[in-house]
Length: 99
Image (cartoon, rainbow, N blue to C red; front, side):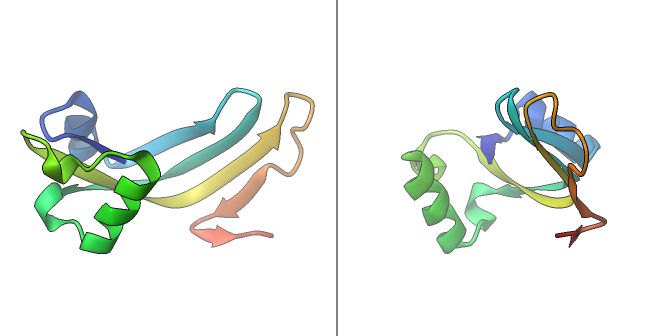
C-alpha cells in the first residue's frame, strides 16, 4: 500500500502497527491481521516500487510530496464466502498457514 507521509493512515500505523485489513468486499471476505511498517518512498526497493506501479498504474516516486509505502506482515488470515459459511475460516495463525 502507499499513502501520503503525513496522512492519518501513516500516522496511525506509526503509532500502532497492529492492523486489520478486509479485502475485497463484504461478501467474499479475506480478513488479515498483522503488523504494518512504513517505508519512505526513497527507501523502498526498486523491484517493490515497480511492482506497485505495474499493479496500480501510479508511481508515487514521480509525484510531488512525500509518500510512504506500507508493508503488512500477516499474522492471522480469515477467509469466507458469504455469511452462511462461517466454519473453518481461519487459514493462517501466528504467521503460519493452516492449510
